[in-house]
Amino acid sequence: MGVATAEYVNYMKALSTHVAAAERSHPSSREAAPARPWLFFRRWIANPLQMGSVVPSSAALCARIVRQTRRQPDEAVLELGAGTGVISRALLAAGLPPERLFVVEIVPDMAAHLRQALPGVQVIEGDARALPELIPPQWHGRIGTVICGIPLVLLPLPAQRRFIDAIEAVAPGRGFLHYSYCATSPLPARRHGLVGRREAWTPLNFPPASVWRYVPGR
Image (cartoon, rainbow, N blue to C red; front, side, top):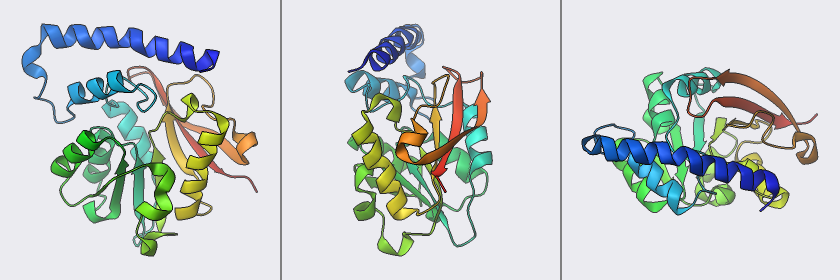
């Protein structure tokens, strides 16, 4: 693990103490919220490299992601690393038909939660690096926007490349949205042949977050 990665994980572990304190102070709230933040927190403790934060995305971040989501009427939206489904619910609330949303989640208990919480949405349990096998062939090339919540900044370059190649295979030329808590670009865009642009930022998330758009370089 590199120095930057180690610092990020240590920072997020420090943030987790606030969540743990809230859980002890308000035990009755554990299952009350639709987002199931305690499920999210427990999964972060189990594997911080699979989770970008200790708590689900805020309404402010969800709204910014929804505004940046594009698709034609015959296209779908693909979300990678949906966690407890707060972004998925924001997309649906904005008018996205459930059958036009694909959600890929690698954690079994979170995938099970998403199937229950998001009726009609196509929830797929699996590794996003295998998107060409996970997404039905008839939808290849018909993905309007890919939303990535996987903390790619924590991964080495070859692992990042596998995710990028998988996205390109099912959404050729479209690139993807990636939300991150880094102050600068979470990906070395040029090294991956991408052009990156920060589309939005919000201080109202915990921690503050940016929405980046990465598209293949011309």
